[in-house]
Length: 291
Length: 313
Image 1 (spheres, helix red, strand yellow):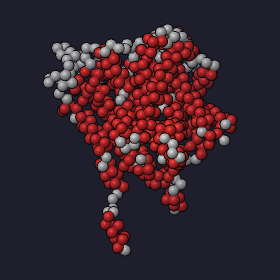
Image 2 (cartoon, rainbow over the protein chains, first blue to last red):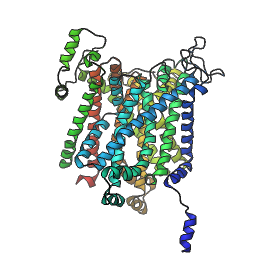
Image 3 (cartoon, helix red, strand yellow):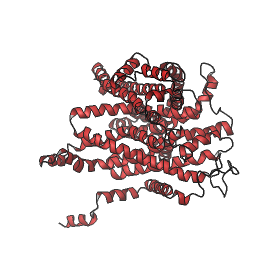
Image 4 (tube, rainbow over the protein chains, first blue to last red):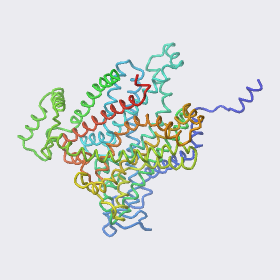
């Protein structure tokens, strides 16, 4: 009796989400990632208030000026302020990251649930289709899709979302297969719950932690993919700023204006790094088995 | 071994079927009349009619697919609208260039990735381990086209040691070929090295905690022998398979690397074709890369069975 009371005092009730949050905050690198992501999100949301200049405003008197007090990051080949373009470019990159992964989640999770919880032949067909999409190298398929759909940020997001979908199908299916043999699922079935209710109410919440981790890491991949497509001219179209297309332009002026190549690359690197380390931290916090 | 091979080959049939449907289906995404999109600037009704007939666009969709697959199976991937050459010929011309780049990248990434992974596992929890992990995170997070631009600036513009772009075949001038490909190969191998490092590290940690390594140590074997002969040999087996799964990333990376360094491989071919609306080439390159990826995975699976005695029976 005394022992159980002592245990009750030592282990106060903590909800799973509170425990995960506490574990996440205990990891310094994950907190660093989270802070940088919040910073980037704020920059993207308040871009018009933060940017010192109009990102599209050209100035023929300040073409390719190195960083100075007037232009902290320097200017580009049309005299546009690079800091302002980096700030506005955050919108395209983060939007592409979040929207394309949302597309992949919306498509991938229900298909994965169906594969894992449906019959054998449904699983077999979905499995082979997933294999087929995964067999096409990610960026090459995204380039092909963006080429046929036409170059634009919206189509780049669709292309990235579609090519990322199989990852979520496989992940959800695998998790469902592991969870559906558990006793509580058997119990839910035994009391007469319909399959749809079991999938949504009992299986999905158990799959969620793994999905959150994968989505975070996939946002990092999607940001690089958007930057790659924009670098190739298949993403955000000029004059709208995007980190990838800024690097494409910078390459032509590497001898005279190397600073043009530094900032957009650094911005992509920081954004991708933040999502990667937050993803690693979330894995530790949400799924201790994977550690 | 034979039943395994038969089963594995049988599994490939539906995958290849869906790959073909996917790549054929790309054509259906073209807005409006596909013949008009394929013709580019050309508006002559006779030319449009010829395109419709050549690509069977006047037929129902499933017939169009059958014609397309029939062509693919007989080695006809269509003709480039821009270069007026068969797509397969174009790919065959560019493939060796990308292959050279990819092979060099694999060698570089194996040397860096496996070495760093082994060191990191052996020195687990030390500053070296943290430094190697940080380096891997850097490798995964750095866009390779940015790294390429920075290296061009350093080694070509500032130091003048290496050419900024271009390509020379090793059969023409081996030394010059090496000079033109070493930077792009390093850039291409960079993120692959980071992935290999992570795989090697976790496989080595697992191997080093196993009974056979404990036995080897108990027998009094020197630590380098335990690590290199016992732990590493076993740890590298899963790395082969995991590495093969990442080869698709390498092929994707080649597109960007070839663009940055102006290397005329098939990555550059697909990008140039996109901008010239040369859709048959885009489909052809996508199909060949998918087929290459499937083949490499099959070979990796076979290699895995061959080197793992427990699976052989």
